[in-house]
Length: 155
Image 1 (cartoon, rainbow, N blue to C red):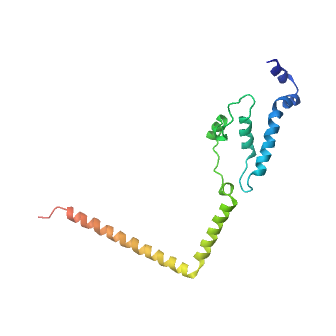
Image 2: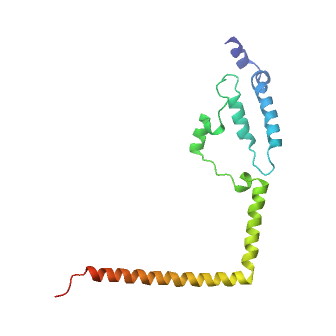
Image 3: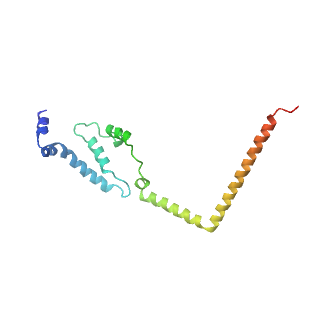
C-alpha cells in the first residue's frame, strides 16, 4: 500500500520505469518477433497483438494465460458498439491460395473468349429460354386441366 502511494506521488518517468516498461518492453519485443514471422500477405494488427499480450501477461492477474482477443471483456463490449469489418481476402489467403484463384479466373476468362465457347454459350441461352417457355406452358395447361376436372358439371 505504501509502495502504491509512493508511485502515485512519484514523477511520471519513475512510474513508467517501475510499472509500465517492465511489461511493455517484452510485449513490444514479442510483437516485433511475431510481426517478422507473419506471412507477408497476412494482415498483422500490432494493436490487437499488444492488447491480447498485455491482458494475458498482466502481473496482477495470472489466470488469463489462454484467453483470446475476442474473449476479453472490454473488447467484447467495444465490438458490440463498433463491430469490426470482415478482413478482405487479401489478408486471409496465403500467396498460393491467391495465385490459384487468380489463375482460375484468368483461365476461365481466356476460355470464355474463344469463339466456339461463345457460340456454345449463346446456344445455351437460347436453350434455357426455350425450356423455360416450355415449362411455363406445361404449368399453365396442368393448372387449366386440373381446374376443369374439379369444376362441377353443367346441367
